Image 1: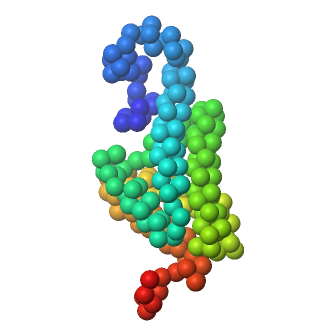
Image 2 (image 1 turned 120 degrees about the horizontal axis):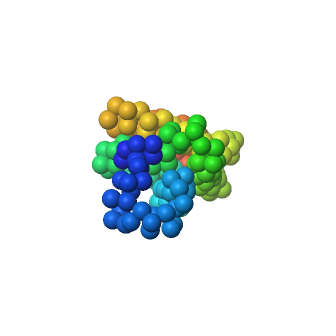
Image 3 (image 1 turned 180 degrees about the vertical axis):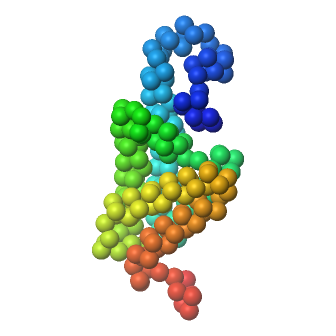
Length: 186
């Protein structure tokens, strides 16, 4: 489903790929909608767990670049796509249950990012004059646009540019006394 999309994936393909019988598949998933719900939950959990782990390691504005590098690393091998975003792109307008689940996943991702920005605000790294929640939503929105364009163009440049633009916006809100200046050491 990640490779070719939900609509293009038949239950016969799932049975063949997984090496199970149809009766075994239907024992766990009464219909394709139930299977899709599990795919969404699995993909969201995988992405959100990885993101949470990376974001929890960020304690300075400079460490945002490590998070950025982790997102860019291997982008082409992953098909230039976000597993959550590609499902949302395909399903949000067709299935309200899927849309709500995917919106919840984006909400969790945004919340985790907002917690990171709040931590940077508490430590004095990031100005408290900007709402951490707004900053987080701006970054997630830029990421998703970057993923979409990168997948469409089969090129990482749109993703890198969108991510760098978003992080540039975040860094523009760094506290002046915590920013590195080229004319000062450290």
